[in-house]
Amino acid sequence: MNISTSTDLHEVRVNDREQLIYLLTEAAEIEHGLMCSYLYAGWSLKQAVSEGVTPAQLEVLQRWGKEIRSVAMEEMAHLATVNNLLMSIGSPPHFRRQNFPVPAGYHPSSLVVRLAPLTRDTLAHFVYLERPEGMPMEQANGFETPVAYQRRPRVTRLTPTAEDFDTVSHLYRGIQQGFKTLANNIGEKALFVRNPDAQLGKAIMDLPGLLAVTDLDSAMHAIDIIVEQGEGGRQDAEDSHFARFSAMAKEYDAFLAEDPAFLPYRAVVSDPVMFAPMEGAPGFHVNAPQSARVLDLANATYGLMLRLLASGSGVERGAASTRRMEIDGAVSLMHVLHALSSLLTTLPASSEPLPCAGMNFHLPRSGLALPQSEVGPVLLAERANEIALALDALSDSVDGLDRKLSAQLREVAASLVQH
Image (cartoon, rainbow, N blue to C red):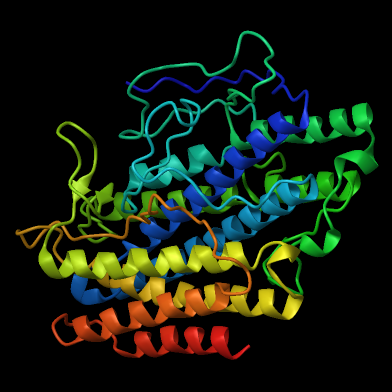
């Protein structure tokens, strides 16, 4: 039985720069995780009437897919904005996060981040994640936290510690207050110490709502944009994520009322993993040989994409033209990742024809450690060519694997070494 979420609006405490950085890095991981969750659900949608949907239903599913991709791109913009907030106060950008499935306790108990097809419960979960602060709502079936817990520290510590928050906008309210508190305590000039050229702006990365952060006013405005676009939106705007997912849920219910057997999603696994989990641990091991190799390609592409994003963030990595080239390369790899991840939803996850596999966004232990700037483009190009070679080798044996994808990888590699 579900229990309504708490509407506790306590203050999230920020007393120093280190605690503000801690909260911002968690915000970055949440934005990153939500982006992956939304993309996974979008990739699960059926794409032809031959999959058991009517032409009218297919038209709506195609619109849902575009809507979900649009929301995911805004999550990418939120991640970039949070990194601007981090860099404005002297921290490096943060593109790391926990691998899926995210363990209980890593985020507050109300915030469950999983990979699942777009079932009605999954969509209810998305609405729940994006709910406005203070709105009581039940967690969706299948997304409950196994054990209730609180992370709020009893005392203020010098060491940065996790804080509890009930919604994502609750976290951002605390971050805003932290910026105001520190600007008041140490002075705005002392707080915002990073070179403004390190920011990700439209000249480097053109994303909806992305804003450079150079002072308190721009920090406040940047956070307002994130919240109003839908991270639990304080304003119930028609184009907020909360409103868009809520409207999608009403359409889903209308289809179910007309046809209780309506299934808009492919039979893909929830919580796929690339490596066999330990006994009792969550996750569905994708071990069908060809599917595992496609998943390997997708994860390698994703890892390179993140390295390019990280390398293009921060003025220390090079001139604006070099950074723009790296960001453009990352955007190009997003198209390769989309194709590979969509293909996975048609391939078996194991020895049985069903369920099908799915992308799991695996990050290696090395994380996003970057090479020295003078050799970085060459090493990133080397990696792109390695993935292209592996894709070529696999394309002859996997139906639907487009060999043209390797050309996109090689174009990225060429741009890196020719710049």
